[in-house]
Length: 124
Image (cartoon, rainbow, N blue to C red; front, side, top):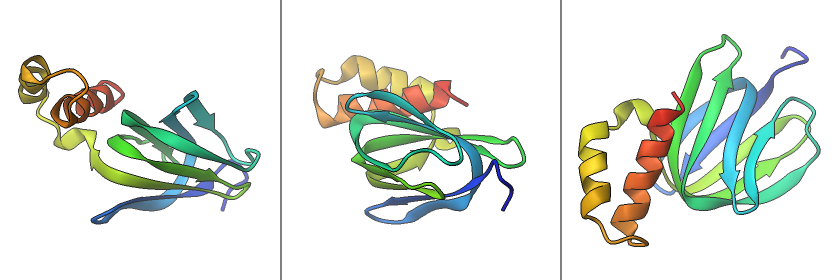
């Protein structure tokens, strides 16, 4: 592993979404957006419901995911995201999610999920 990379695992309740090496991770926590580089101080954070996650892989590829709740664990060598649900932004139909957001009641599960999907799609 290169000095500027670290291992990232993203797991949701129903599947393992990602396992690989990254140079940068951004996650939305309950205390704000958090950026993680190699060698980051250890921490445990709560992910916001309706948030997003960005992973910049070693090869420079950028991946974004919609996240619904969960936790982020950072050690000096790895980042683990345990999400209630997670899905890749490139699977998101932006037009359908905008319509769902407009029709959903603010604060409802449907609203939160549509918001997370749109936020992730904007970070690709």
